[in-house]
Image 1 (cartoon, rainbow, N blue to C red):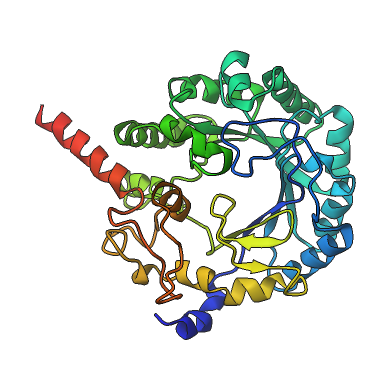
Image 2: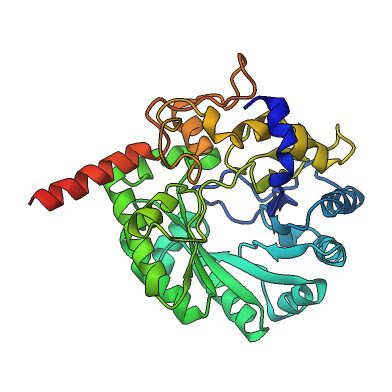
Length: 369
C-alpha cells in the first residue's frame, strides 16, 4: 500500500485514546520511567490556551478518551480546567497520577471536572518491592491511600503494574491486592526499556517467562473477578486467539492506529515509549488532526502488509503488529526507513515473535514429556 492509498483509507483510523503528558515534572524517581522525569520544572510545556486549542482540534474530528498523564499531572495548576474543557467538548477524560497527591478533596475536584477514572501504579505486593522500584520511600503507602480516597469518593480506578524480574513472582499477590482495594481493572505493562528504563534492560523477563506470564494473564482474564488489560505486549492478542479463535476485545499494538502520545512540549508520537517524532504541534498551529492524517510514521504503522522481517510474514501481523518501541530500544532500528518512508524497519527476528517461538518450543517440550 502506498502512502496515497493509506491516506485514502485513513478514515478507518481514528484516535480512540490519546495520552497527553501535561507535565514532565514528578516527585518520584521510578527506575523504569520512559521520560526519566525529575522533581523539577520543565520549560516550554504547552500552555493552558494551547491545551484548550489542542483539545478543540481533537474534538473536531474524533471523540477519544484523553489520558492526562505525566510526570505527575496533578502538579499542573490548570489540570482540572483542562479536564473540564475536554469534558465539555465531549471527550472522555481519565488521569494517571502517581498517588502522592490524591486526597479526598482532590478526588472531589476530579469528579467535578469530569475525570471518570484514574490509574494508580503498584509495582510490588508490599512497600519494600514497590518503593525500591519507584525510588521514593513511602510511595507504596501513598498509592494505597490514593486508591482508598478514590473508593470513598466513588471514583473508578485501575491498578497498573510494570512487569520485570523483580516482581514477576509477585504478580498474583499484586492482582489480589488490586481486587481487595476495589480496582475495576488490573493492567500489567510489560517492561519497555526506554528512558530511565534503559538501565533495566537486564530486568526484562526471559522469553519463557514472558510466555508463561501472558498465559497466566489470559487464564486470569477468563475468570478472575477483575478485568485484565495488558499493555506493551501486543502478542497477548496472539495468546488469546490461540486459546480461543473467537476471542474478541483484545487488540495488538494500538500505536498510530487508534492511540497517540503528545509530549509536554507538543511533540506527537505513536506511543510514549517510542520517541520518534511524528509532528510538532506548535509548528502545525496545534493541528493534531493534520499530524494524525499525514505523518509518514503513522501511515506506515497502519499498513501491516508492508512490514518487513518475520513480522511481515507472521499470520498475526494484523492483530499484533509487534512492539516498535521495544525493537528500537533493543536494536536501535529506526522506525521509518529513509529509503521508503511509507514502510517501517522491522527487527529481523520479529518483535514478540522471539518470545512466541520460545514459548511454542516450551509447550512442545512439555507435550513431548
